[in-house]
Image 1: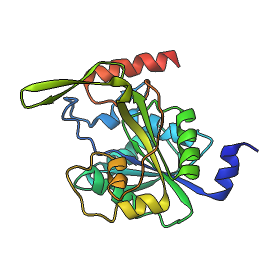
Image 2 (image 1 turned 180 degrees about the vertical axis):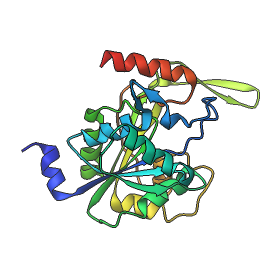
Image 3 (image 1 turned 60 degrees about the horizontal axis):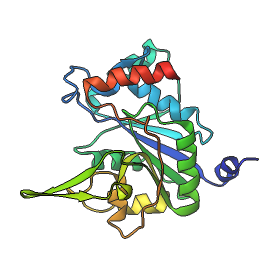
Length: 233
């Protein structure tokens, strides 16, 4: 029996996929999570990545309530039958994740949070994230910066050591107690992701190796890159 299978027999896995985008930066009428890549909406690719992983988490999808009917129509059109729960999004990403967490009461669980518009998260990264979090409390996927980094303060810029700079991705995965406790805090503007929310409670954040192909679709040119990545696969 593999290590993942052994851990899975001991804990329950969940993923909260947050899809709150409005399409503003993409310049489209349809939110980016619904744009089609290789015949399927971006969001369906993301859901399938978790569904086909060995971790096989319970899937919770967070969508603005105004798009619930549209999502159901897409599922019918594409005969998309992957089991999942649907919950309404909140005012911010923080509140959307909190709404997803409200559906989970299993204290012996590991919970990942994933951007809906990261459709190329590999099953290798997903499984490693759950395994590491189950053993060490949490796991945040990140990659080292490939570019030189400078920090701007007022009118002065300073070079930073790029070997110490990591670009954070998702999934960000936590044991139940860590993330549940963290989301009992009041919202603050400094909460840019789930790691920052959990870190604010004094918990050490563990980085694990991500994948440079695990891109977040944000701008129109990202769609072209996504199509190329699919052709490679």
